Length: 257
Ligand SMILES: [Zn+2]
Image 1 (cartoon, helix red, strand yellow):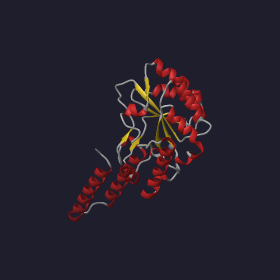
Image 2 (cartoon, helix red, strand yellow):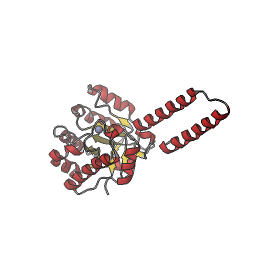
Image 3 (cartoon, protein in one colour):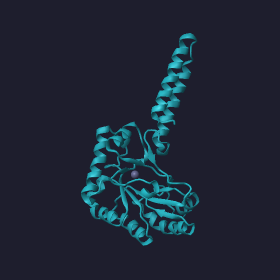
């Protein structure tokens, strides 16, 4: 498997081969530059595409042979929209996962209690959701995850084991932190695009077209557009005989310690 470790080993072997070859017949510098570019592109792709599991194992898809899908919501709790989503899920009898941002918890404790009491699960999504989270040191990243975990623990008494990286970006630093804390990294297999699409009909049609068995769908409980999309999408899924399960069931994982 082409993961971070294997890639580095492979490139070191190729580099040694180049240097050795250089002794006998001169290797054009372009080969070294080309190799550097390929390595850089691989490292970037590995960072952006969580599903490649380049830096760390991640869970993004359930069994493709079963008509089961799951909903997940990032970036909350949001005092305005998370309760709307919770009402909607309750009416439809659906359980989901909420990947919460630590610095939003203190002012939304009631919502966290409600998420927990209504049977949904929670995972971490960093404390700050900082744009440059991926450039943080091991220490700073670890504090972000632990602070969020501690706050959820204080409110619900449960110790989270799931973490979804902000923007889905992974790197060797995050991989170290995750290993230290013993978390499971969660990705997604279908992005709803609720952060970029302003038209609920476009969003709905896209979801209906793309959804497949085993999909873990990424939504954001900060986006009002969802209240106009989710009821129709759920009706569609039910008419197509999809079962909507909680993400930990779809992925066969424990959400809490
Ligand atoms: Zn996010």
